[in-house]
Structure formats: structure tokens, C-alpha cells
Length: 112
Length: 147
Image 1 (spheres, one colour):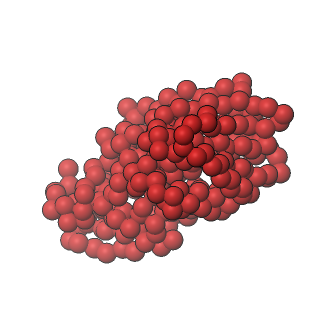
Image 2: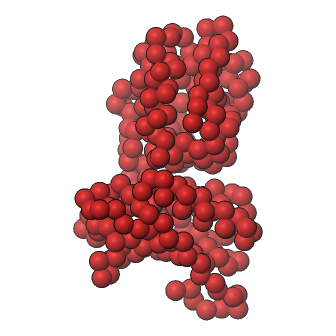
């Protein structure tokens, strides 16, 4: 599983290049997120548009990734596919993260 | 067992090792067979989430103190429902009862947000019926998804 990063002004965009974030890769995801975001500042948008499936371990890894960031940095999520969105809604994690339908929507919105 | 009706009831079985990679392949395999049998997209997503949670629990908890074993998934798809039985030879659920599946609270400081404990809540929210019993050293979880 790989993550790729790009920068848009003060915003770091981390794209997940995997179809699943599940129990078998939750730890790697968290560690790779730490490496990608370490030492940066500003807002991070996690682009999940390639991800078809997450389970509760994958959700936990995304929460852990947010907790790893400095408290001044915000982690927003973009491009949630239907199954992924379902998991966020059912666990009420849609009240914890800002969710955007597309990366462009996320980029257009100003950070809170 | 499926209650006999006018539909032809065929039970299919998938068996795989209770490891993380075995579980992933097993879940993906069952979902792929259900897709092939015509189960529609939204139901496939629901079933995949529930199966992943159930089987992750078996891998992480039922077999945590033992040498790993295997998981058997039996399933039967009719027009009105998908029935699934998941069997393993791991440790019993605590008190041999289904967990309530209460969601951990999110009304906490960011650094205290939960990273787990969501599984049973997801299972109970998405399956139409969930039952558990233990017999002859085997855990048996019966799930029904109304279509």
C-alpha cells in the first residue's frame, strides 16, 4: 500500500493508493501516515477516492493518524466511496472529521 | 439450516486460516462469489463490512491464546435473505454471549478519541439478525441479511 503526497499552498494532500484499509494493513497505514505528515504544518487532506473498503481497523488507523498530527493541524477526508462513508456514518465518525465528496470540494473549502 | 421453501436453497462453504491475510482472502472470496450470484452492490458492501468485523474478531480474540485454526463460512442466498454461518474453534465469547455493541463515546478530547471497539456495533447495525451459540468447542455465529 502506498501513500503519495502533493502540496497545494498550505495544504498537504495525501492520496491513498490502495483499494482497502483493513486489519491486515492498519499498522502500516498508520506508520506511513506518520512518515508522510511528520514535520509538516498546515492542513492535511486525505484523499480516499481509490479506497473501496475500510473496516473498523482501517477506521481506527485513520483516527490514529489524526491523533499523530500536531494539534494545530487539521485532517480532513475527501472522496469517500459508499462503503467507506457507511462506516464513518454508523460509527458517528462523520461528526469528528470533515468529509468532502471530492478533493476539489475539500480544497475549495477553507480550513476551520 | 435454511427453512425449506419454494426457492432452491443451496449452501456454499468457504474455509480459510484464521490469520489476517487468510481472513482478507476469505472475506473477499465470499463477497466475490455473492457478487457472481447477483447480490446487488449495496448489500455486498454491507455484507463485506460485517464479515470483515466478525472474522477479524475471530482472528484477534477467539484464537489469540491458541495456535491459529481455521474459519468456516457457510452461506445461502435466496430472494428474501442472505443467511451466513461463521464457525470457528477458538475461545468462546465472554460469558458465551453476544456483546451489546455499544459505540465508544466520541464526546472526548481529540487525543482520547477511540481507535477501536466499533466492530460489534457495526455488526448489529448492519445485519438483520445475529445469533450466537457454542457447541462441542465450536463458536457458531448466525447472521441474516434481509434483502
